[in-house]
Image (tube, rainbow, N blue to C red; front, top):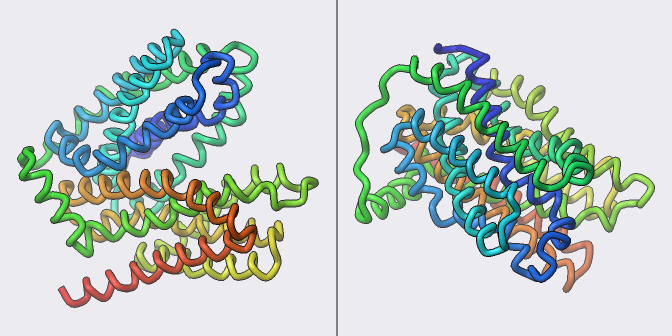
Amino acid sequence: MRGSWPLILALWGAGLGAAMQYAKISVIYDLLGNIYPDGGIALGWLVSVVGGIGIVLGVVAAMLVARVRYRRALLGALWLGAAVSLGQAMLPPLPVMLALRLVEGISHLAIVVAAPTLIAQIATNAQRGLALSLWGTFFGVAFALMAWAGRPLAIHAGIPALFAVHAFYMAGFALYLSPRLRTLPQEGEMPAFSMASILATHRAIYSSARISAPGLGWLFYTFCFVSILTVLPPYLDPAVRTVIMGTMPLVSIVVSMTLGVVLLCYIAAVQVVILGFGLSMLCMVWLWVMPALPLACLALAGAMGLIQGASFAAVPQLNDTAVAQTQANGAMAQMGNLGNTLGTPVMVLELAGWGYLSLPLLAGVAFACGLILHIFFAAMRRKM
C-alpha cells in the first residue's frame, strides 16, 4: 500500500472529519441560542472545549496513539466521533452536550495525531511533500465545506441533520479504512505509558530542536490565522468584505498546494516555513502602511499558505522514526490548539485598547517570533 494515493486521500478525508468537529459548531454558533436559550456564556464552551483538550492532552494523545497503534487509534477515533455526533443529533441538555464535546475532543486529537503519521509512512519520498501539504489544508477545506453546505443544511433541515450527516461521514471513513489499514506493515515497539513517561516525553519533545520545531512554529501560525480572519472583517470595505474573507482561506490553500509543493521539491520544508513567516511579516508592514487593503490581505493569505503545508512536511523531514513523528504531531496538536485558543482573545483585547494598528503590530511580532524560532532551531540542529 506504500505510495497509494487513494489511501492517502482517505486519510486526508478522515482529517476533514476531525476538522468538522470544530467547524460544525462554529458555523451554527448563532443558531445554538434557539436550542439552548438559557445557555449564556456556556455556549462558548461548545466551541472551545475541544481546543482545551488539545492544549492539555496533545502530547499525551501522541503517546497513547503510539501505544494503542496508529491504525487502531485512528479507527477507534472515527467510530467514537461517529457515536458522539449521533448523540449530539438528539440535542441533549446543555451539560450533556458539553460532555459529548469533551469526548469529541479526544476523538479529534487521536485523528490529527495518527492520520498525518500514517500519511508520512505510506507516501514515497517523492509524494511526501505533496501529501503532507494536502494534509495541511484539512482545516481550511473543512471550514469551507461546513460554511457552504453544513450551515444551509442546518438551516433548512435542522441542526440534528447536520450532526447526523457528520456521524455517517465519520462511520463511512472508518468502514473504508479498516480493511486497507490492516495491510500496512507492523509498527515498532510499544512505548511505555505512565506519569513519569508523560513528563519525560514532554521534556524530550520540547528540548529537541527536531521534534519541537514544527509545533512551536505552528503555535505562531495558528495564533495569527484564525484571529486575523475573525477580527479583520470590520476594517474591510463593506463592498468587498464578504468576497475577501471568503477568498483568503482559499488563496492560502491554493498557494500551499501549488507554490508550496513546488518549493518543497527544491528546498527543505523548514526553509519554506521561514520564507512564509518572512513574507507574512512583510504583508503586515504593508497592512500597517495601507490599512485593510484587500490586495495586501490576499497576499498575506498566500504567504501564510507557505507556512501551512510546509510545517507538516517538516515533521518527517526532521524526524526519521514513527515514534518521533507522532511526538512531533502531538506537539503540533498541542501548540495549534494553544494558538487557536489564545489568538482571538488577545487580538480582540489589543484592538479594544489600541485600534486597528495593533492588528499588524501584534501579528507582525508573532510572525517574527516564528521566523526567529525556526532560524534558531536550524542553527541548533547544525551543531548536533
